[in-house]
Amino acid sequence: MPNEIYAEFKNALKNSGCAKCALHEGRTQIVVDRGNPEAKIMVIGEAPGEKEDLSGTAFVGRAGKMFDEIMKSVGLETNQDMFIANVAKCRPPKNRPPTHEEAQACFPYLKRQIELVRPKIILLLGATALKRMAPAKKNFSMGDETGKFFEMPEYPGILFMALYHPAALLYNSKLKPAMMEHARSLQRVIAANFRPEPSTAQTHPL
Ligand code: URA
Image 1 (cartoon, protein in one colour):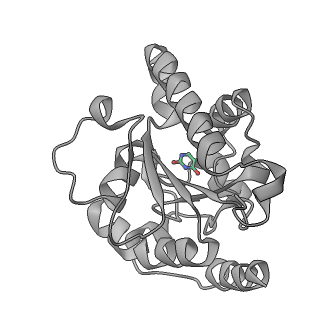
Image 2 (image 1 turned 180 degrees about the vertical axis):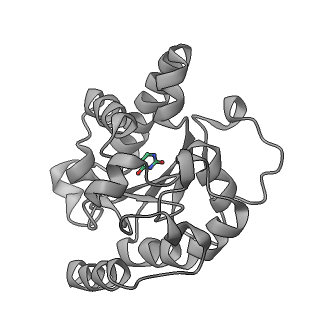
């Protein structure tokens, strides 16, 4: 029952009173996730913002809504087809990105989420997620990395894709056409690899 094991993990983390880094001082609550822990697509964002901190659910603010819309345009329902988590589970002051130390302190939780959800695809939203998950990529530019798929030996069987963080699109609408193109690439990869004809669906489910 992977769902039950995940529910147990989530409950324990939410109620843990975690104080592994200074972000605990400013949080209303620990924000663990949003979406479907049985989904084969996992999304990793940066950290909760104000709405997330107050509601206890990841990606429910403006950036989350923009992400929902973009994914919907390529046939993906974020709450059903995706599982969404963040590098940091507590809101940083003034919504700054989490520091390297904060991201490190929170990493065991993210790692456990990956282990329990066992996604086939992980979308990395923005530089914080890309840096944390792919530390071998040094001095990268998001313009070069977004839209590309890659694999990492430490995560066998998982296809990674870097995307712009939807908040970046709110500040710079010129990035939106590229994001739409990347979403269509994702749709093509899913169609080609993970959504086979019904006759083979049992042996290769998404
Ligand atoms: N931005 C993120 O990266 N994550 C959230 O949950 C909200 C905004």
